[in-house]
Length: 215
Image 1: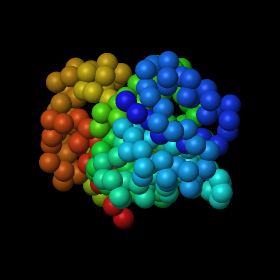
Image 2 (image 1 turned 180 degrees about the horizontal axis):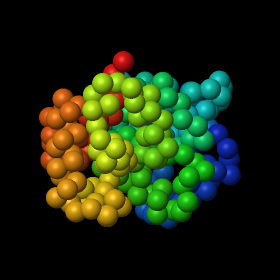
Image 3 (image 1 turned 45 degrees about the vertical axis):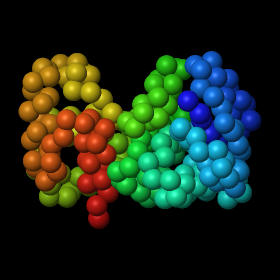
Image 4 (image 1 turned 90 degrees about the horizontal axis):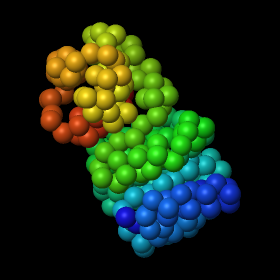
C-alpha cells in the first residue's frame, strides 16, 4: 500500500515514515510543504495520503487545501488528516463530499502505533477514522437544527460513534447494550435525518457527515 505523507516537522515526519514502513506500507513520498504535496499526489497516485493541516509556505491550512484539491482531481482519493487542530470549514468539506475514505485524527490523542495504523488502513480501504473530539465539534454546530433536535440522547451517542467508523458490535460493546438495540437506533437515526438506511457502514457514516455539513 503506497502512502504520500506530508508533515513539516522533521522528527515527526521521520518517525511516521519509520512506523509506516514497519507495518509494511510503501512510502511513495514524504514531503514538508504544500507545493511538494500537490505534486506528489498528482504524479504518484498513492493509495492513501496522510497530511498535516498546516504546512509551508502559508502555515495556515495548506495541507488540507492541497488534499481537497487532489480529491477534486481524483475523486475518492483516501485522505487521513493528522493535525493538532480542528479546521472546521475545510474539514467539513473534506468529510462531506461522500467519495472515498476519509479520516481526521488529532496528534495529541493518538496514543499508540496500533491506533494510528488502524486509522490509515481503514481510510485506505474506503472507511473512516474520526477522533471523537472532531465529531463532537462538527455535531455541536448542528445541535440546534430541527432534525438533530429530534434525536434522543442515546441516538446522538450512537450517531457520534458511527461517525468515528465504529461497527454495530463495537458501539454495542461501548454503550453496554445489544447489537439488536443498536440496529434499531441506527434505523431511527436515518429515518429522523431523512437518510435511507444502508448496510454499508462506511456509506452510512459519510451520509451522516454529509448531512451535518448542510447549511
